[in-house]
Length: 105
Image 1 (cartoon, one colour):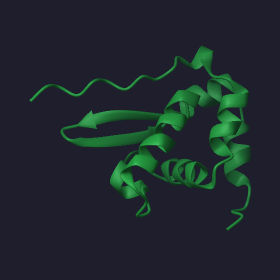
Image 2 (cartoon, helix red, strand yellow; image 1 turned 135 degrees about the horizontal axis):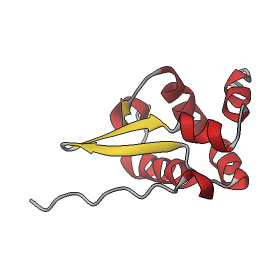
Image 3 (spheres, rainbow, N blue to C red; image 1 turned 90 degrees about the vertical axis):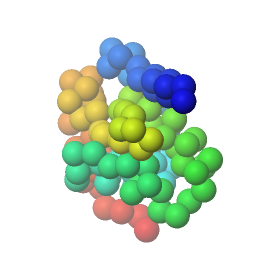
Image 4 (cartoon, one colour; image 1 turned 180 degrees about the vertical axis):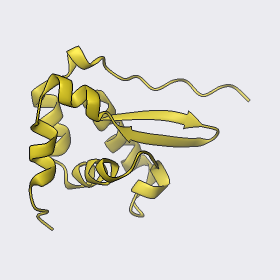
């Protein structure tokens, strides 16, 4: 079996505020970030909420490209974590301000 290709994660100096805010504008992606803020790591399965795999792949790609999430392979499972230290270094207090907002659901 061929090894899985590694995920691409932008360096923190390339984080872009517009891309980050766009990623967080979707309720599904915001819910993923909120969940990851409470745990060290979570699998895609823990975060999918019963949604189709193809839809969730898109959401995780948007989150990775914005710099919000780091995804790693653990065997056949994809484990996700919030890039909090990188985000806080690039945009101090922004993530905390976003996470403090009440849920709109």
